[in-house]
Length: 240
Image 1 (spheres, rainbow, N blue to C red):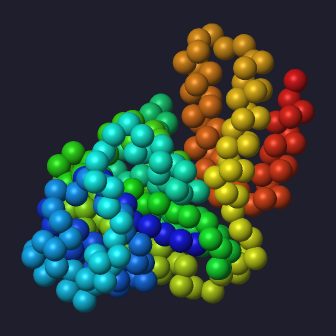
Image 2 (image 1 turned 180 degrees about the vertical axis):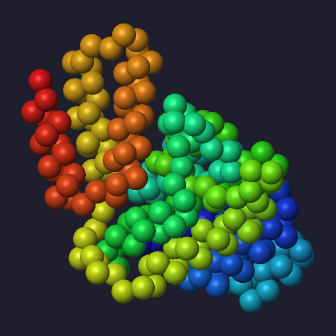
């Protein structure tokens, strides 16, 4: 598994430095900054990173943010996971979350040594991720917090998520021979699903799209094995 922490328009260099330090603590060394408000040589960034300045040195930077940025990320990663403190109710499918512990359980199913590319997308300090950005991800992870003050600092939140992943994936992996499907195979399932949905009658186009969104999230959250994926594709093709 190749895990990359992606920071969306980071505003405060201290937070990014703290995230780099947490990444080093938990053996994560891939960092991507999208339209940061500071440069790599920022003094506060370097001071907060401490012994993790090599993470900053090797961090990738996307200097601008536009409508094609998220599409590019979708091509760069097999699974793109959004983080948010603002969860939705059952009807708000894109914001229907899992916990860091549940995420770690799913990632633990990935075969050791696998090149599956995972992107953990962390939102802005001031406003988090937009609805469109969240909808463009495979699914959402959120940290259970107090109802009176639920929003965490992004460096604290990222640290908790990385800790849960490290704790679980560092344990003996009893199903390490199983590797999840890639982005290409996910797209193949969705193509078959789209073809079948077009044949079905729905009251409105919105209801058809809701069905597609639900199935997309289920398929992504499941981290399907190749055997499961081909069984699902075979089943979908048989639906009349």
